[in-house]
Amino acid sequence: MLSKLWKRQAPQMVGIDIGSHEVKAILLSKTADGFKIQNYLTAPVRKGAVIDHEIRDADAVQDALQQIKRGLPKSAKYAAVAVSGSAVMTKVIYMGASLNEEEMEAQIEIEADNLIPYSLDEVSIDFETLNENATDPTKVDVLLSACRTENIDSRIDLLDTIELDAKVVDVEAYALGRSAELIYAQLPEGAKAQSIAMVDIGSNMTTFAVVENGETSFIREQAFGGDLYTQSILSFYGMTYDEAETAKVSNQLPRNYMFEVLSPFQTQLLQQIKRTIQIYCTASGKEKVDYIVLSGGTAPLEGMAALLTSELGVHSIVADPFQGCLHAEESVKHELEPIIGKYMVACGLALRSYAQWRT
Image (cartoon, rainbow, N blue to C red; front, side):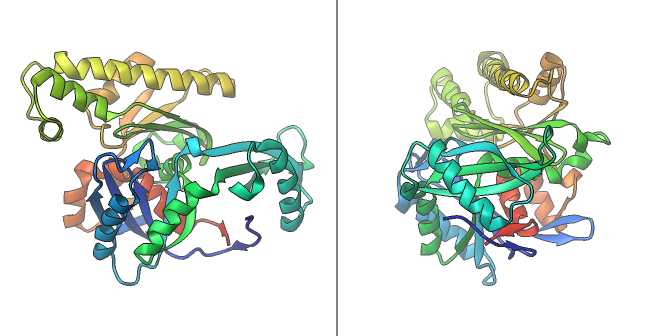
């Protein structure tokens, strides 16, 4: 099903990030100098319910979403959610700049039939006009995206059960790229015009999005995350999984943990990020990225940003949108500031409330 009309004003949507450990939700309002957190919520997800961003236990996820719903204001009716980038096929194609929306749609269906290895009855297709083509001004670059409909429906159906209307189903990496809008002020002046690698380190997956001039130009996912660090802690010190998670979060680990578990994990993470940057550079023809911004639950690991800066020669920081253009009541900011990096994908989804969209 293809969208046909552009609407100038999207409804306000709750950004809901369904992760393997928890569901995170955030509601943003627009202010004169940025965005303000109206509401934020988190609910744990039973272990194994979501694996590699695929929902394996819908009932467990529904339980978490119901907790989220109870904490939302009654006026919240719409939501934006995301599917994993690995579930989505994307390709930039070139189309005549003079084509109107309906003509583009007809052409897209022909292109999609040739590009997608599934029956069109099994997939949901969308497209977005990007920029004028660099080599031919009579054409425009168009991003074609396709995803198995069952992946989208599983999320829409779950939101239906808690009486939220999924107005947008995005791709996680693009939502992460959009969240860069919140942290430009955290970087040196002029950073928006340069290449920023947004790296979200989750429990089982690291999501990578390169943003240039406000547009996400490259995305990738790696099956690597903070759970490996937790597994190292529990095996090295004979803890249970829950004990290891608690010790990790509260920083109550044995004195030698930096050498025994932290340093080896950081070296692995460094290699993952380095490899992905090399793939981006090969694809883009650039020598390196200009900045690295870490987010996700594993991002605040002691010394991680400094290690990346030292080893890769790239200015690296941990995302703190409160230093950018994100605002909140003092009590909310005090509670959320230490963990705000976990909400970057949810923030990127909530920002769809303030962007052009098709319906």
